[in-house]
Structure formats: structure tokens, C-alpha cells
Amino acid sequence: MKKEVEIKHLPMEEKKRLVAEGKMHWFFPGHIVEQIIICIVVFLVLITLATMFPPALDEMADPFTTPEHIKPEWYFLAAYQELKIAEKLMFIGAWAPKVIGIGMQGVIVGFLFAIPFLDPNPDRQYSKRKIALALGGAAVLGFIGLTIWGHFS
Amino acid sequence: MTELKLGPITLRNRLVLKGFEMLDRRFAIKEILDEEVFTKLAPTHLGIFSCFGGITFFIFLMQITTGLLLMVYYVPDTQSAHKSVVAITNDIPFGWAVRGLHFWGANLMVLTVMVHMAKIYFGGIYKAPREMNWVTGVALFLLTMGFSFTGYLLPWTQLSYWATVIATEAPGAMPVVGPLTKSLMLGGPDVSQITLSRFFTLHVMVLPAATFSLLIAHFLQIRRQGISGPM
Picture 1 (cartoon, one colour):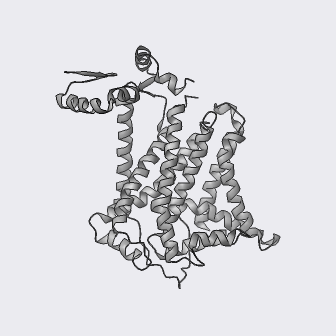
Picture 2: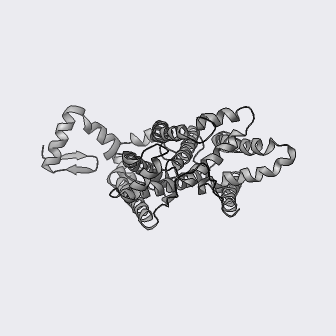
Picture 3: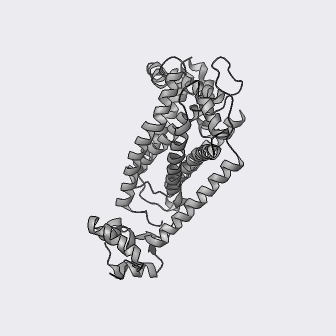
């Protein structure tokens, strides 16, 4: 792979050849126009959602009335369900559910940070990264599974 | 000067040329534009999943814009917060649209961050020499979750109030560090005015400042290392 600085300082003739061969394209206007189109599409999606599905507004908070069912937003549902599962660890001791439940989330975040340093494999082809792909797939499925479970629990 | 060549582009419009000359005389912009824009190459091997980092950044800019507009009318006070959000939604011209964009932007941004991370993971793009940019990215992901967590309380509704009560109870039950963590988050034993003020400050000042700093680091690393090549 060529480094960014090497590509940047290629002679103009070489750059034109790369573009003609279709290996690269000009940042301007080719790439910029693509980005602008994507931004417009994202904006249209957002304004459509905001118009068709306006966010609900619950009644004002009342610290003296606890509502019956409180669920977090979808992106926190997996973490919420994980804490609920950890409540099953009551038999170890009263401290166990919270300590293990929250400790586990800390471990997962720490693990996320450390991924590049834990993966010793320099290859990027799918066929040479079977373990990493399996672990990643399991993590994604686990997150989706916990989210759905949290939604229906 | 009747025409100007910038990489593959030729400028002929007299007004554009005049404006260009004014700027170039002061800031020598031709060099920068030539190098950073007009003779710059972009890869062609990228699919739609490679765009999610950029999409996330675009949504973040939208959140800054709609957030600033909401802040003009929102009142971070337990007695007025809910009323001000009702007013934004029902009375203020296009308030409903701005709030809707901010709400959906927040939800979509969490999703696009996750898609971006999955692409980087499954494509093996976090590998050397880009290890530190993955670390920067995970920190940005946590900041996004922080934005969601703090922003959720601000309308001061039943749901947002009690969700915050429950979400802060769990870390509060940790031994040794629990009570301190909880009182740092809430500013007291309960979710109160101090909590609302803290979450508001985090949401509109601390988290944006941290996010901007990390985004600069994120983008500078991409500039230096380039887009990763095809597999």
C-alpha cells in the first residue's frame, strides 16, 4: 500500500494515468460531489422521519409518582438487559449483581479499546481472519439479541 | 489574468478570478488549493459502508446546528424545562421540525456510529498503522453515548426523569466507588435541579468540546495515514 504522502506527491502525469485507469478519482469535483449527494440524502431521510414520525413528548416529570414500565432507549437496551441477567447472580451474594453486571460492561469497553493490540494477525483478507470474524459476528449477534430480549422483557 | 489552471480544473469566470486573486495575494491560497483540493486523489474502491464515518460527521454537524437552535428557547430549569419543550414543539415556528431533526439525528447518529465501527472491524481497518485511530474512535463512540444519556434527561419528562433515576442507581450500588460516582453524576442523593444543570452543561459544553478535540485527532490521523487500500 502506498502511503498518503507518497500518493500526494506523485507527479501530475502519474496522477492523470491513475485516474484514466480508474484506480483513483479526483477529490474535486468527483469525490466532493459524491459526498454532497450523500449529505443531501441523509438530510432528506432526517426531515422525512421528523415530519412523518415526530418525537413523542411524555408528561412532565413527577418525582413522587413512579411510572410502571420504564425502558431505556434502544441503544441502551442491551446494557439494560445485561444488568437484568446479572441479577440472577444474587446467590453469590447481595453485592454480586451490580458489581459483576457493571464490571462486565467496563470489561467490554476496555476490550473494545484494546482490539487492535489484542489481534496479532496482520492480514486483512476474510479467509485469513476466521477467528476475528467469528468473534465480531458473535458480538454483533449478542448485542442485537440482548436488545431484542430487553425490548420484550 | 484571463484563466487559471488548478489541477484538472480551468477557471475562466472573471468574478471568480478576481476573488481568487484577492485571496491569493493575502493568503497564497493557490498552493494550498492545488495540493489539498485540485490535485488530490480519492480512492475509487469504496462502497457505501465506507461512507458511514462521513455520514456520522454530517449528522453531528446537524446536531450542533439544531442543538444551537433548541438552546435559544430551551430553559434548563426543572419548573420550566418541560414547558419550554412543549412551546418549542407547539408554538415556535418550525420548532417541531428542529426538535424532530435533533431527536432523529441523535438516534440515527448512534446507528451510523455502530455501522461505521462494524465496517472498520470487519474490514480489518483498525490494524497497523491505524491502531490509535481505532482507540480515538471508541472514545468518540462513548462520547456519542454520553450525548444520548445526558440529552435524554433535558425535556424533564416522566420517562426521562425515571430512566435517569434507574440508570444512575446501578453504578451507585457499586462498592467503594459507587456512592461517589452517583453523587458526582446527580450532585446529591436524587435527580434534581443540580442534576439537570450538570447534564445540560455536559450536553452543550463539555461533550461537544471533547468531541471536537477527538474529531480533529481522528481526521488528522486519516489525513496522515490515508484511506486503507482494498483487501
